Every structure is written in C-alpha cells, then in structure tokens.
Image (cartoon, rainbow, N blue to C red; front, side):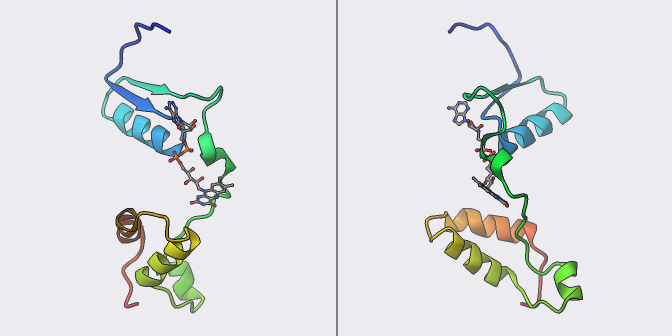
Length: 102
Ligand SMILES: Cc1cc2nc3c(=O)[nH]c(=O)nc-3n(C[C@H](O)[C@H](O)[C@H](O)COP(=O)(O)OP(=O)(O)OC[C@H]3O[C@@H](n4cnc5c(N)ncnc54)[C@H](O)[C@@H]3O)c2cc1C
C-alpha cells in the first residue's frame, strides 16, 4: 500500500508505550504518525488490570508494610518466570521506586 504521509516522528505500535512516545514528541512540537497493525489501537494495554508495582511507597509505610527495591526486583523476576530482561527490570525499579532503607 503506497502512502505519501509525512511526519517528523513515526511511532510503530499504538499501545501505551507508543502513545507515550507520540505524546512526548508532540509536546515538543513534532508532527507524529502512529502506525498500528491492528484494526484498533490499544494493544495489550487495553487488557491491563491497571495495577502498578512500586516499592517503598508512602502508602506502604503508612500501613507498616516493609518493602524495598530489591524485593520488588526479585518479585518481578519471579512473576516474569525469569524470562524478563534483568537490565530493563532494574531500570524500572531504579526509576519508579522510592529509595528505602530496605
Ligand atoms: C491481561 C493482562 C493484564 C495486565 N495487567 C497489568 C497490570 O495490572 N499492570 C501492569 O503494569 N501491566 C499489566 N499488563 C501488562 C501491560 O498491559 C503491558 O506491559 C503494556 O500494556 C505493554 O504496553 P506496550 O505499549 O509496550 O504494548 P501494547 O499495549 O501491546 O502495544 C503494542 C502495539 O503495537 C502494535 N504492533 C506490534 N507490532 C506492530 C507492527 N509491526 N506494526 C504496527 N503495530 C504493531 C500492537 O498491535 C499493539 O497495539 C497486563 C497485560 C495483560 C495481557
């Protein structure tokens, strides 16, 4: 299928990651094109339960829950049956968790 569409940024995949990338590019003025292979956007994102995995949050502390980035990393490795990428997981844990005495 030929197309003469032109954009500053082309995002392949219209799930959460693609939409975040597209939004970030649009926010700095880029004209963005999202390409989605399915008839509708959403991907597995629309199936998500909407839960977030964090460690050392204020909510946990208020309830006396002892947690740490190390426990979160181990838990997510187990949930992913150790098929997940440890480097990516570590980046997630480092970036999204609150530093704790652990
Ligand atoms: C049942 C279920 C429950 C879940 N619950 C949770 C939860 O509670 N908490 C949580 O954090 N995570 C949850 N997840 C995981 C989470 O939904 C995914 O990790 C996340 O949505 C992935 O987002 P994504 O943008 O990377 O991929 P996707 O949302 O899958 O988007 C990828 C998109 O790219 C498209 N695509 C792929 N290849 C091409 C191509 N060549 N050309 C064009 N388009 C293409 C796909 O069709 C799709 O639309 C759950 C997943 C499932 C399946």
